[in-house]
Image 1 (tube, one colour):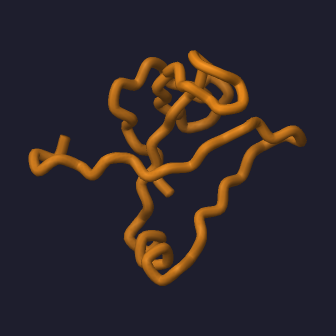
Image 2: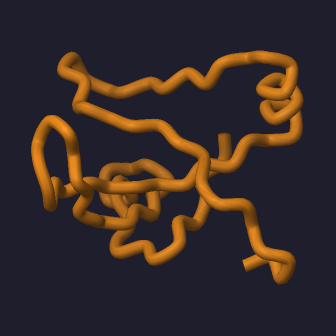
Length: 86
């Protein structure tokens, strides 16, 4: 997966720690567990052609979280790009 440019990014994290830098969008969501206005961070990821082919052939998405205590997370598909490519 390639790091994508999330619409409305509010900051880039990880670069100062030696990583590539990950654009994120800070937002508040209504969470069924934590309630309304729960802080969240959203990122965008783009599959390579080989990964997209594997996904279309039934492969699953694997998520690796560094550390020993995984945070709550949601995985979803973002909107399709517009015809203008924006």
